[in-house]
Length: 244
Length: 311
Image (cartoon, rainbow over all chains, first blue to last red; front, side, top):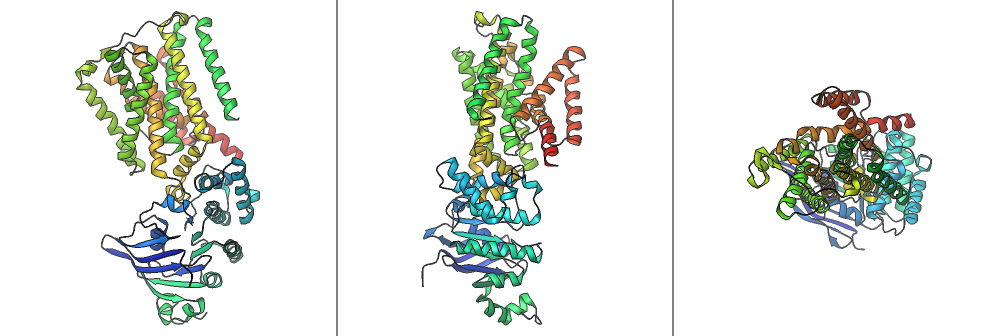
């Protein structure tokens, strides 16, 4: 078995008396597509906040690319190749789409010249299908375009791992297909993708491996088929009568 | 406009201003123009933190007052020139900005704004109780005579303030178009998203505090020379803080031009009101104009242009 790109070990997080997460162990292999599911309040967002540096775990360690990043601030994790998008899009309002992507290029990219930077931004815009919106203010984008911008911004940081937090919430079926195709294309370019999602058919189509969380703990882990068949997952998440 | 071209235009403006003492004979215009330019510097400095990075600072007068008192102190203690006084004020303003930022930037929104008001009170109280700086009754500041070329002290400080205004605007413009400015604007829009994009938010906010504080303190440095007298009530006046906030809001906070437009408009109206109606009308004018803009153009005059372009 090859070495994990990302290894989460015995991570726990509590907010006062509320135990939000843990203990949790998660591994992510290079180029893998991992789905994380679970009911609301199960600890999905807390887990990715711990991984991306927005929460500091109470215990445990997080190792990424062979380096312990448990105490590394979020911005340095982004520079180190760990990008994330947000559940609710957070565009840089007051900036154009192009400028939105310049921010991660400025702070994360190894581009040496302004020309290289601009070329890279153009490439990212092309890959997410936002070329025509290049100079539009972020305020004027549609919901789908905002989701794409969120992903594009994460991509501009040249990530090794992309954590997509409910990147398809609120989208139509056609739009979900659009975002799924985009994530698959990214993954094909070598980026490992962690997808946190409530839209089950999207997670099952996308993921090679799925983890189900409940009250902060992993209750099931396996292939999409194994997860759907798991009685525990059915009980806490799908409901007893759910069919695939 | 490219940065180099911008600097050339700015230097041309400065050079033209230097010629004004040879063309304009009435010193009142320099007296009133000084105040307008002083507010260009203050509003531009305020906008670096308040506009670009989105952290509202109500305590601009703390930085202005600290700069003024630092200049007066340096002159009284060491007899240094006004240029060294400005440099000293700038350094003090930056350090004060850094310290304030370090203590307060972990709090956001209205709490940050309240903390900056507290800074004014703390500094004013300190000066009130410092005998060497004249205490509550203030101190006279009899500066060295101005170089003969300028024709008078008022013309001289006007030209110095013009130089400061040009430098502040060039700095603001450079920040705006650079990676630092994009980082500030990302922080203003969403700190978590900025952090996730690799922006070191805390470091950049401290930088914004230091630069903003440095510029606003520099604006205060020539003030003792301008008035020949310095007292804590006028140096730490909350009106300065109110104007510093109102001017960028009126002009627009997204660009360097907004604070300049706001400062020129509001400070000119205030100067006009002072000589035609009463000096007390100043505060009323600021209040009325601010209410009008909050209601009709919350993103300032430049925001109106942006809105019409986006529509």
